[in-house]
Length: 180
Length: 276
Image 1 (cartoon, rainbow over the protein chains, first blue to last red):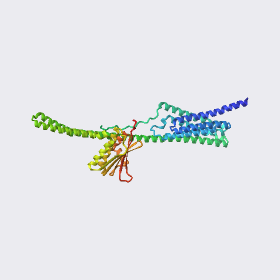
Image 2: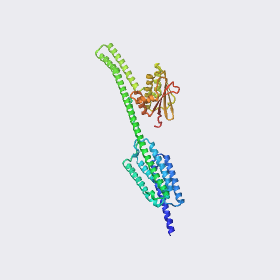
Image 3: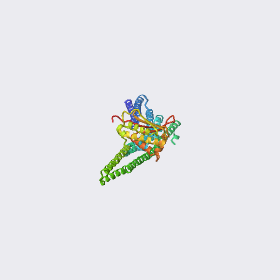
Image 4: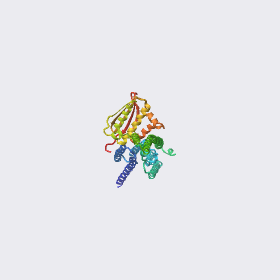
């Protein structure tokens, strides 16, 4: 009976990690997918996402159970960071006269970047740490999670108060002043 | 304190974790700050460009207004100085007719009045032609340009020729007028300032673009000179060319031939859509 319970519990735990990482990835990549302008890169996001989900499922089915699925989290972080760097590169390329922080996507993405960079080392090293040793560091994930949520809220506020994107005004022509 | 209570392996893990996280955060903050400052720099640059563009527009607009005023003054002078006295003289002859009962004198004054009215008609026609060349209106740009070049050549001051290679589909009438005015302005400038012995115009079409090129062997301008004059307060005619080209979304290029013998002025504008 106990054996079956632990089997079942293990399955739920595995599914939880699988779902958590996949949901995390899906949410972040969706934000980036809608913020990135390049169609080519959007296609790359779609293909990478399929590859990542496949990898995540295979990993969870084959890898021995551990405290946390560090490898998929590490891969997820790196992939999302690549998307973020591309987004920031696009922002650098634009010749907008509006400040970058007037774009709500910028706040969302900076929140995600801070969360991912703050928790990256902790999540990939978590399986090499003892439970006693883990406790004092665990709160760090909350700090970065809260920071991310604050940035998401700022992004939402920017969106609410400034929803319109910059429109390119038509060039003013010199009026045709011919006498005819 | 925490490091003291743990074994060396755990210390190294903690150190890696601590340094790694701090490093990542520093990189993230650095990246965000870099993006913000770079973007501010770019936006400052964009604003400066926008301001310069506005200034340029203002100069062009002023030039166009000034040119229009000059044209009006010329018209007013033509009408006041030429047509006015002629009509007044004709009126005097006709008045004479009313006073003088002698048949022969009456006929003579009527004849004189008719002569003067004919002159006035010719004068008004000349003014009207200077406003809208009839060749351009009736036969198109090709004929108008050929006509203009023949007149220049006929005057004997310069050898002028023009050749249209592909002009079966005429540009819209208003576009033709703009192009003709630009050609007139360029030719005037060449006549006034270049001291050249010949001027040759060629026309062709390539892709969806219409091209006109003027060659001359006198003193000329290159693109940097044109841009400089365009931004300065002098060079009213060139500003007028720029403003006309803006209307037809065209471009103009001033360059020197590779052989360094001729100057070339190329006008490029989009061809009219035949389905429009």
